[in-house]
Length: 621
Image (tube, rainbow, N blue to C red; front, side, top):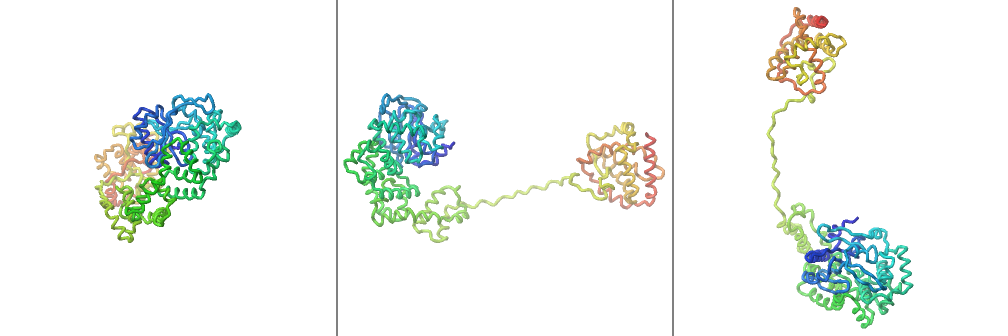
């Protein structure tokens, strides 16, 4: 599903966008709801160029006449039975405003109108691709109304009748189907094609009212390729019924090709003329004056006839302006060609014969646009001139005018021209230096224990770890730990006894310095107890050390603390995997104090210390 809000903003010319806004404002002031309908919605959906704008209001459309004329629109025509107004908005925007209605056909080509809401208006239309509407009202802007699934037929490129009796009720739809088929290259679906052939054989074409005949004849001139539409109608035999004097043999074919070339060149440069009047002049180039006059009288838009009649006079007036003193420079000529009424510009580009005029159009189409490639994008970026600055579009425009006038030839001239538009350099970035935070104590996870802190199996020593947590024993629970945890320590297969055994064996194999350092560490940790505020962890370490400390006469005295140390050893298994506590600060001091205390007698006493520990555990059991 297309985004119609985006399409309304991007696919329409500035004049068409302004016309939509003015019609919206007029309908809102009159208390009416307004919708964009018909071919404009179809062309937006298919990606074709939008030739004109059809609006449908729920109410009396004729009440909008004065308000739209005050807004600058020129009334081209009016058809009272359907309450339809034809306008010409500044900038070459053709607009049709009508009231929502439904139709009844007592006889072919004789409609009776009844005012109705928008959905009934869509169901009375000719083909499903034309039976869609886009809301232009507040709260529903851009909403698509498609009660007959016309979008599916657009995707399938089918022309499908809304009603099975469409060609019988309104034979002008035969002409419309032929024009759409020639313009879009679509095919009628099977049933529509069969009904088309039946209506063609019944000679219903003669039932078309004069108003609709003139409307369809005028639409030939509003086609982008009017000759193709004229040939299609002629090949189907419709032209001899609606206007026999107008055939493809009366057309200036070569002139039409040249006109379309100039038309597309103007579109490329941002000039949007309405090709209708100029094209109609060439489509009827070989017709008799009386036939041309009769054709003009049949048109439903007298304003279009007036534009056609005054095309030559307006072109002569524009020629004087273009060749006058006000358009001597390239920039002045460019400004004139992009701001003047585009229809005389198109006709002068087609009919102008003087060398001065042809050279100006040649430069406008091919030479001057190349100056846009000379815009110094790199230099502008270096000078901080970006689309975000004010007056950027104005700068590009003035820069382009100076380039086509030849005023900016060197880099110095270019830089001097851009200097007033260059914004000041931004201030240097301010580096805010944060004050150094106090060195955080290293986490156990990130610490790699030294070889001195590891046991034989590469695990950290339990006495070097700061055991903290709610699951450790409080100082008041020491007695309960002695009685409740004594039996598991004594068992040889218990998990708590195994670390004690290994620790004892390790103490035997350690040198004298390490063995002598144990009492020093214990003393240091006991002194640091009040600062650490971790009573269970600090009390556990000295108990373990006391059990392993070598002494000849005190081995039995230290057997009991081994039992107490068994509890923290068992409970310390969990913190060993997920360490949270940090090593105490006085640890390095303990190592230094331990070095100068060698005791040679410790090596012999160490093995004796391990045996009493085991015996004491068994006795306790």
